[in-house]
Length: 426
Ligand SMILES: Nc1ccn([C@@H]2O[C@H](COP(=O)(O)OP(=O)(O)OP(=O)(O)O)[C@@H](O)[C@H]2O)c(=O)n1
Ligand SMILES: [Mg+2]
Image (cartoon, rainbow, N blue to C red):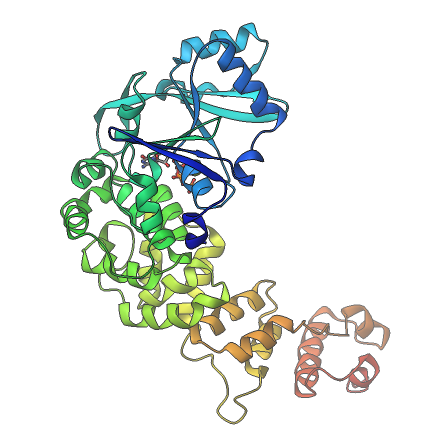
């Protein structure tokens, strides 16, 4: 993907002017953004002589040949100017919560467009910022986290790159804009964003700039003040990207684990092992993280801090409980029977998917592909069938069903209804 990007045919000319690097982007992904909604938005800004550009992550994605999932826009217009412009044009605006930070959301042709006024952060407490609006594009680029996230793209395809973001993207380097220390102090979550984008962009593990790591180490404690929800969103994405084994180890080396809900004495060696054999099998984030936990109390503590979903927590507890004792049988190492027996006994809907995660954890590739294809046989007997053959009391029905389940299991789930009912003594 990256080599293709270097000699992309969609890029037609490059100009360097002082520290601003510009060029024209005309890729298919870029063209495909121009829906009726965006064309309408662009026209309106042009008519009112306000500049409008695509900003941040979407520019990074477009330059990497990816269609961005969400596109943020930046403008020189103030929120007041935008509001009056949209009102005059009869365009609906929705949820004005972002207005304090300069964001107006307009709805055109059933599409929402988030447009944010250029700004500088005048005061930050490491979580929230007090902002001041500006018409200077470079100032807005300067307050962004990473060089690869600091670029703008005009709607004519012109790239505005003040901090060598494009060069870094081509060289697969992740760097903070200006001082890493300052950028991190503005929002400590950026430590985790750095790791996440490192996973996405860097060609291999361990190619960090020493100053970046020093700034992260020095500011790690700041993560303690960041909400668990925000941390979990970042951590989850990071764990599923490249180099996650290395990055999680780095989190321990830089002494950050304690601030983000991970056990201070996490089992890093086990995690690296698990990551290595699970990474190509689409593991859930918790399958990798579970390897760090030594006991269920550590899972509980993580949940208090990160407020993970009920399913995520239950998977972590499940893996910690069963990772050693529920494994392939010595006598029949190729058989998925211990796992299918477990699923049938547990009668829980999600136990099959949990066991698939367990097999990823254990690195059992063959058993995993079999279990993925296996479908649970249906137990052919109901209470109703037993009543028909004369078992009437509730207690007796329960006990007989259990007994028949055992018989069924011994037959490796082959016996049908009649064969099973022949075991019921009238
Ligand atoms: N802590 C943060 C979060 C965001 N940003 C800036 O705001 C942009 C948009 O943020 P967001 O959508 O949260 O992230 P993306 O970089 O777009 O990544 P994703 O693809 O995950 O949306 C970023 O590119 C970056 O310029 C920042 O400087 N500091
Ligand atoms: Mg984004």
